Every structure is written in C-alpha cells, then in structure tokens.
Image (cartoon, rainbow, N blue to C red; front, side, top):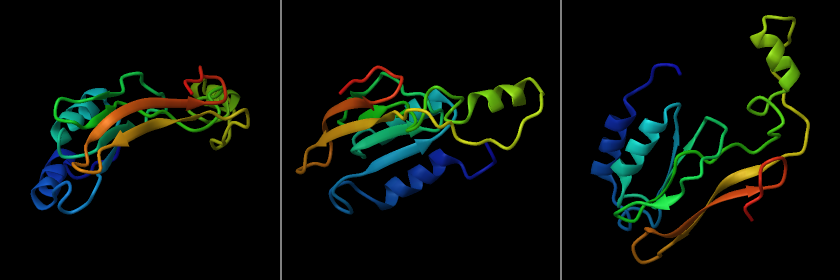
Length: 146
C-alpha cells in the first residue's frame, strides 16, 4: 500500500485526546490493512478503549471473532460484500488473464450471487465495551452463519 503516516502513532495520539464514554458512547475501529499481525496488534492496542476493532481490506472473512481481555470485540477481517465466485469481487476470467499476462481490460466487478460478510456486536451502553461478538455471513457461495 502507499506510504502513509504511522497508524500506531496516529492511534496513540487519538487515544490521548479521546476517551470511551467521555467523548463518545461507542468506538468502532475499522483497520484497513494488509497484514494480520498489524490488525491483531491494533486490536490489542485499543483493547478496553474501543467497542470493536475490525480488520478490512483482504476480502476474506476470518473466523476469529472474540472479546479481548479488556472488553473490546475483535475480528481480524470482516470479509467482503460481493460475489465470492471471483477474484476479490472482480471478474475471475479477466483477473486470470491479467496474472497470465494475456489480453485483459481494466478490472470490473463479478456479477454473480452476492454474499454479505461482516460482524455483529452487542455492546454495553454503560461502559461502551462489547458483550457479544459474532461473524456474519449471509447468501452467496460461503457457508451461511445466520
């Protein structure tokens, strides 16, 4: 990914200036990152300071929804909403042609049956922390969990 500010440094500055239940009732951190270790580290960094830390970007739902030690719900990757009979939501034949260095055009979405992937969190209104967390997968090619 393109160079950007250090996400942990920016998060640390945010935490110094903002507090759960003082500045907002709930805090959802969507960490759009490539590496699972970074996403896990961010989850632990915000544990007790956010309602949910959920990773995005890799388009593949992980099966590790849990509540961390200090009450923050965590999921490494929510997955994508789209056609999983594809290459990360894009037309699979065109994507294969790109990888095989054959004639292809600009990426375009797959048009099959969509899957809705995400996470559901039940939170405590008194402290802003998670009481329950579950993966959510509905429709399409993946095994439905609802």
